[in-house]
Image (cartoon, rainbow, N blue to C red):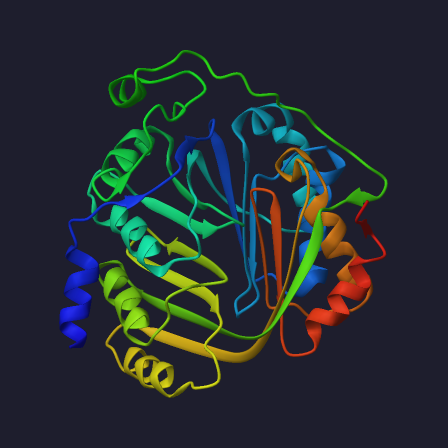
Length: 351
């Protein structure tokens, strides 16, 4: 039965619906290793906030060794390269840098595992190298080499359909845009930088009793890992992050979800994963996630820095931070969520 289910999920010819796909401008990806907790994040983030650089995407995974991954515009990097390097040198941290990359945003994901499976299939294509895939409030954000954006979108459209007359992928429609939707011309979007002494948010949401899994595996095991998780009864996720390591030969998947009260099926699958050759698996129960979002977060510098600095000052331990699009996810062990909310109520305000 499990084999039939896997075959059905992986091979179904029925396309899933998307509301749209958007391409970013050229970006820089920085990755730091061996970062410890909030206190280790503050010196990395302070320079970007000080120089008013917007971080379009940010991840901290505290599982040893702590990994930080952040993305910002190539234009900002060119204008502030010396300032960024100086700030990082002073703090004694040096990143691995990849440039140029681009972010492909597809929405909505509806927190559905079947959509995640289809998106991950892009990584099978030899024409694309997926560096990072993460979830925001309503979208998947996939990072590939800048010149591979069109190729990644073409592969996605084998499994997904878009509504008629959807907006162009780029602000300046490409040949692919024109072919798919007639290319209605340039889409004008306002790019702005915001700063507020007290940052306004739309609100926060605390979820408790969640399960977090972290699985490390070789590139040819990507779909098998996700299919096994589907077989374990996981249909929806709260947060997901898939990151390539090294030269793209290995991936690490971090997923947060509500496993319910019965963990028997999940434990059996995770035991099986842990027993696989060339695969490592870690599971943590009773995790808590505080999520908040606000207007124009992607255009505001210092949002993550403000949150992390406050938590560091309160000596808070956090397991994971994911900032993507207009939302911020903060993950902690049992009891940590309410403490994070109490700290952040002092620095963020709901109008």
